[in-house]
Image 1 (cartoon, rainbow, N blue to C red):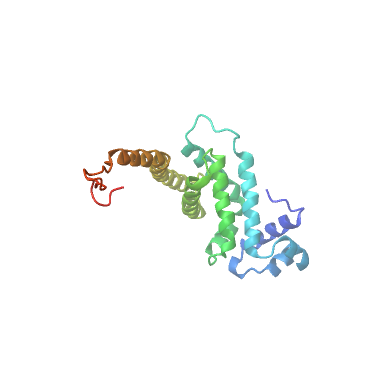
Image 2: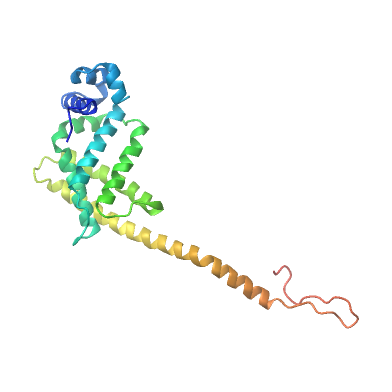
Length: 234
């Protein structure tokens, strides 16, 4: 998955190798440059910081997962499709599990990793045939981000070759999320219908009010009359 013939690939591979035996927080870009056998100016052109290196690794994993994903989802539910996509990602990460344990123990990374992480979730949803666009897509993407983070932590501690704990946790979380998303979609559809119908409702209501409004009629001596409607009515 990591092409070590490229500068970025060399640096990612070197960084993950170092993380297998050292705390990620203690590893510097100079350490990574030395391990990769690259001068610092070339390192800076590839990655300006460790967070950028991790974002590059995430994109490589994304590419690997998307290559494995079917072009069309058939004969299975979206939940089952997403289950397969997430397990495919964890399978791709397996060779780097020791390094990822070190990285996971480090203090929270800077905020530059938020967007690459959410982009990863969006592409996993897309690979599972789930719409990740618009407001509803943003909710799904954020929800999957929380779900994946929880399952990822379970996976890090799951030493069973069959990953029974991981699969059970993933299935449980997906079922909960499926129910929540279905409720959200129903609510969103209701809001959309209300927004669509609102102009017609307002027009009909105003039309009805104007139709009911009595016209002022002149009095017998020619002075203007008064309306019999309530004060302040339109």
